[in-house]
Length: 115
Length: 113
Image (cartoon, rainbow over all chains, first blue to last red):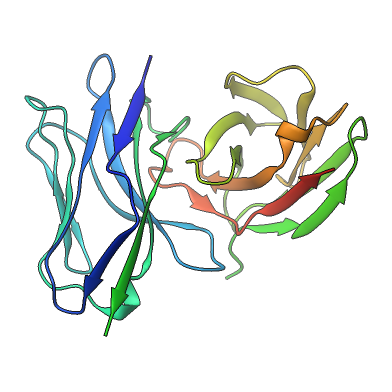
């Protein structure tokens, strides 16, 4: 079945360090891929997405590239800030219609950035 | 513009009881999905409602049921609670035929003793 595997956390970095959070997926067909972020005390927020192979999603300095050959969608940021401390979730959907339906999430990776 | 709102934020029940959780979608949205997030896990899809009907369902038993009202708000009902039902229950909304992003509420934290 469809699934997402994320690198286990927690991840602890100093401010301005480079961030990579690995995500690989298993799915039939051509899923759309997402990164969601959950700040303390808040709901999940969409960070970025990619809908087809080789697409690069980007937002707030974060990037991820849809690699079909390696079934991966790794999240990267060149210089993290304390305010990036949160839990990051990789997710996929096979819904190709115009309405987003079922998402499959990874377990989440806790990121803590120290000043 | 109000986002997705859920109530209650926290509640405690005992095994065998029943619980109802409520969700109001973001303004302009007509489709509601429910997810269960156990501690240390990612959210798992329970079901999705549109036009007061269940459109998709995940791998959850019939003890989990839902309802959508004409104003698009939704309820999640769980009967015969088990200890394993303790989790954060998330509601997400989108707009049919246009919605390529899910907007999530902050969730309802259910503890079953």
